[in-house]
Picture 1 (cartoon, rainbow, N blue to C red):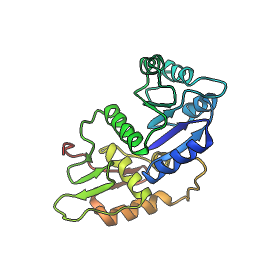
Picture 2 (spheres, rainbow, N blue to C red):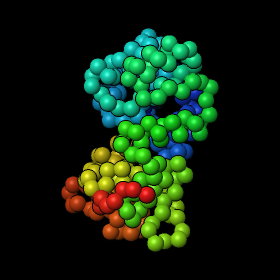
Picture 3 (cartoon, rainbow, N blue to C red):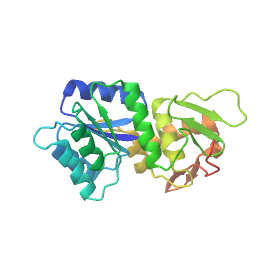
Picture 4 (cartoon, rainbow, N blue to C red):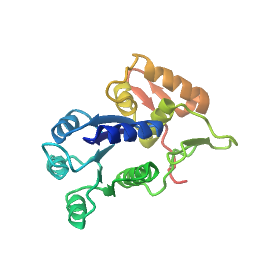
Length: 225
């Protein structure tokens, strides 16, 4: 999952970014509203973490701009403003959730997962295609009829999550790179091929189909767990 973090405090941004990367997210950080709007015009994100007290342009105006452009990307406001009017303005303005600083990173990530589930129309926190089951809350991957969970690297987990979230859909190399790598991360030309190769060895070659010249796809099966 690729996240846009809009936060002007460098210490907070560094701490949140590090925690999210440990949680298998790719994170792009910007420190003002204008840059956030520009990023959303050029890059697709799964979620925006939006501070309100931004320099130059208040976060509520950024939120209004996002929704005015018909951009449905989920937005989770992360702010020190704890008054009722600010919370109501944020939620009524199109935010999907609102969390007040200081916060625990475990709660932030739980709220992120809940927003992403609602946005994706899911009720269960787990993702599955009927054979492979992935739990974003514990980072565990299980294969039907196997006793032991599969251990994946951060990047392998991110690729698998991207594929299983859109099971039945072909994702190109560019699609997967955009989900897995943030700004500034060096991406080798064969990085995705290498990650797919490692995944297929761990979960079974038949679980990730290679559509030559187009991309990769996980078969779509039943999705309830």
